[in-house]
Length: 387
Image (spheres, one colour):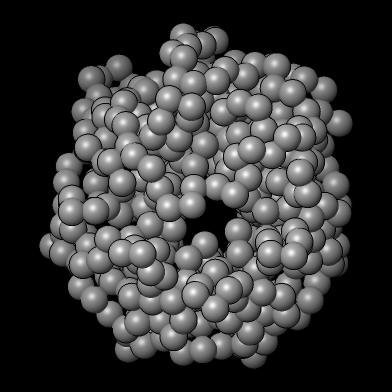
C-alpha cells in the first residue's frame, strides 16, 4: 500500500552532545532488516532539504547534558548526574514573519539522578517522574516538579522498583504504571498513583509480564497495552485495563510480535502501531487496533523499517514518524501516515540522523525533536518540523 510517495517538508535544528547510558540497547547489533531506507543518511550529516514549503529547522542547543541523555529521551525531562535535571524550551513569535526567540534554560534538579524513567503531566500541571535506574539500582522513588517554582518534591514511592515501564494518565486523573523490569526480573505488576494523596496502590496485574511495550489511553478511558519483551521472546499479545474494575482483559493479538515500536491514538479512536523489532528483524509493518471490535488489521507498510523512532499525531490528524534505526544505519528519514488512505508518504529528512530521541507536538502545530543518539555519539541538537 505504501507506494514511495514523496512529500515536501523540512526540518530546522540545534546542537549538543552526551555520554554513554546504562545497557543502551540489547539490539543494536541485530542483523536483519525488512526494508531499506532509500533516503537514509547515517551520522550527523547536515542536510538542506528545504523541499518546497515543509521543513525541519534547527533550534537552539540544549543545555550541556552528558549522562542526562535517557531522561530526555524517555521521560521528556532531562535526568542527569550532578547537573540540573530539567531543561525548559521556549518558542515565541508574534507572527510568521517576525523574528523567533528560542532557547533552553536550566531549572531545578531532581532529588535522584535517574534515566529510563517515565514522566507524566498531571491535571494540576505538575510533572510526575517515576522509577528508572540510577546509582547502580532500579528505582521506586517518585518526585513531582512544580512549574511555578521550578522545584522537585519527593512523593510516595512505588511498591516495585522498575525501569522500561509505561505510565498513562487516566481520565480520573490517576497515573497507571505498568510492567517494566526490576531486580526480580520482568514485571507484570501495575500500580496507581493518586495525586490527591500522593500514594501508590497496587492494582490488577497484567496477564503477561512485559517491558519495552506501549500503553495507549483509548477514548473510552481503557488502557491498551501491546507488545514488548519478556526474556524468552517477543510479544504480539495485547490487553486492556479497565479503571472501573481495575482488571486486565486479553484482547486481539497483533499480527506481528514487536518491541520498541510506537503506538498513536488517531482522531477516529483507533490505535496505530508502527515499526519495532522482533526475532532478528527490523519492522516496517504497521497495524491498526479497533477498540469497537478488539481486532488488529494490517495497514500500509512504512517506506523504511525502523525501531526506537518517534510517532507524533499532527493537528491535521496525520501521523509523523521520525528517525530510528534499521539494523545498518541510524535514520534521518521521516514519513507521514494518512489515516484516510492508509498510505505512508516520505517527507523531508531531519538535519541529523537520530534514535532514542523525543518528539513533542507544540501548540503552534510544529513538532520539536530533541537529542538522541547516532554513530557520532549522544546528541544535544534539536529541530523543528513544520507540516
